[in-house]
Length: 152
Image 1 (tube, rainbow, N blue to C red):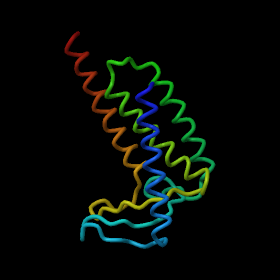
Image 2: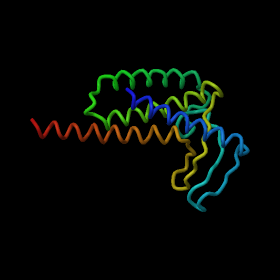
Image 3: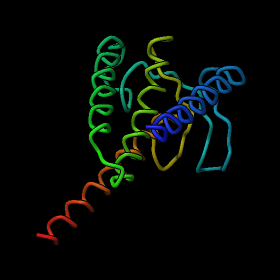
Image 4: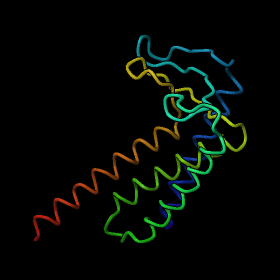
């Protein structure tokens, strides 16, 4: 449980600090080139879900996030220490979900700013943690399934 708290807290802190820096140092819609034709900081407000889908459904997103948080905590609690990669994946997802939840509760939108030209949607550190966490969890889950099938 200690690792969960450290990972989740770190993600929330870095996510919220990065968003506050963007808000305090950039104008809405402003884009700053970091690597020309590849990576930009672009300040946008996303009132929806991924890719801006379902805009202005804040109460719905808050409710869904709270359900996801409860499910992650429930599942994490029952995973043994041997499943450290699955636990890491869940920790990343939880930290990202809570980072974006803070935005939705305080502003009714999520601050996005990472803009790769090869991936059109602008996103944030919380989104990156969620996606990375899902990938880590799925790879670990798949690996565990393969190990179990080989043992039987």
